Length: 77
Image 1 (tube, rainbow, N blue to C red):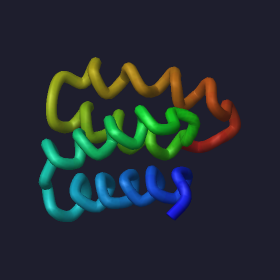
Image 2 (image 1 turned 180 degrees about the vertical axis):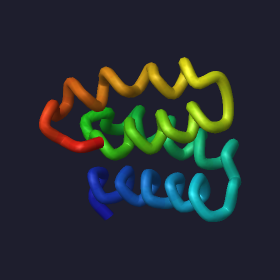
Image 3 (image 1 turned 30 degrees about the vertical axis):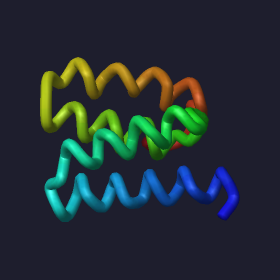
């Protein structure tokens, strides 16, 4: 598996844990790993920010909004 595909897989698994399993600690760890590999995907910032905003202080989640906006200002995320 290529590196790009592997961190996308981490992101998808983290998002699955966040949305359906409510395994938020594990999801956060996976999002962090995926962001460390490649911080350039907007959906990763959005999903991680959403997770942080719903499981802790909302300000932690908002920290990822500028990153997502800078990556693509026309993206609806």
